[in-house]
Image 1 (cartoon, rainbow, N blue to C red):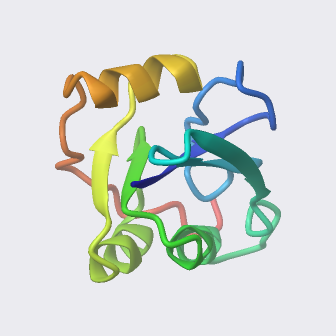
Image 2 (image 1 turned 45 degrees about the vertical axis):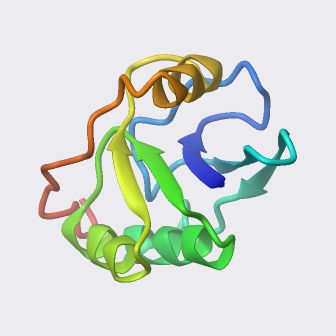
Image 3 (image 1 turned 180 degrees about the vertical axis):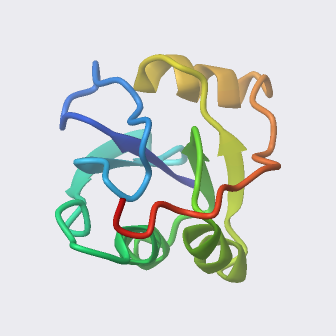
Length: 119
């Protein structure tokens, strides 16, 4: 399974980013190979549409599960269209969230916000 998590730093000790579309990186973790890598979020500095662009990065990585604290409506639409399951991240580190996901302690993300639309 391929898992994506928005993160602040390209480090295994990084905290999960509070902002999906404006996160600095995405952790891409392959549970079968037990391998991870970081993908720079080229959408982070976009003047608009960061959520949609970030969502497309996640889709292009063949992600099956996204762990994120929140999503805007447009990003959520792209992710859902790609049939990616979205779980609500806990405040904490990559490791803590991967462990919570493995132990089935994360809930599906049920609420999305309208998005920031340049704000």
